Length: 195
Image 1 (cartoon, rainbow, N blue to C red):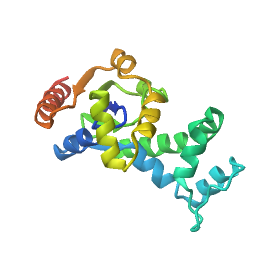
Image 2: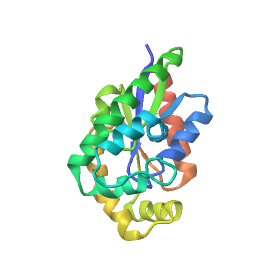
Image 3: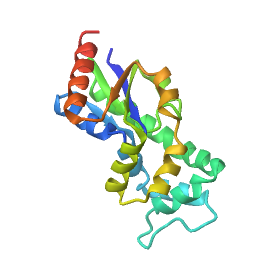
């Protein structure tokens, strides 16, 4: 049976870089956030999501304004819960169908930014956590998202800390220097291939 290996890390940790590298090795990688974005573009989902908000959350093309929704749910845990109740089951169904198509592989990688926060780690045979010092994560995110430091710090504050995540992770990749990160990933891949 194909093993599911969770891949997670806080904002700016470099989990996408790690996921891309693993995929370049021919290992199937499922990026949950990308799938969730595509699902949110479905007409039926647009209607379902917009119905839970009293505010206008559609842009001028009748697509969900993800930035507007993010700003609403950021300080409203109840709305976030309602949104997740719509999106997460659809992502889970999509993943299970994707997994069937990759059942000939000994393991697959499931990259989820909020793996622990959603309880998704319970569906994984092992978890890889990508970490980096907070200041480096902030710098990376500011550059990547053209964001400001305060908003990045707020986003970090809303995620579980690396210290908490480390306790439930099987592999920890400290992503400071890419060269060292790639060596660490190669070791993890070898362990997974031989387990």
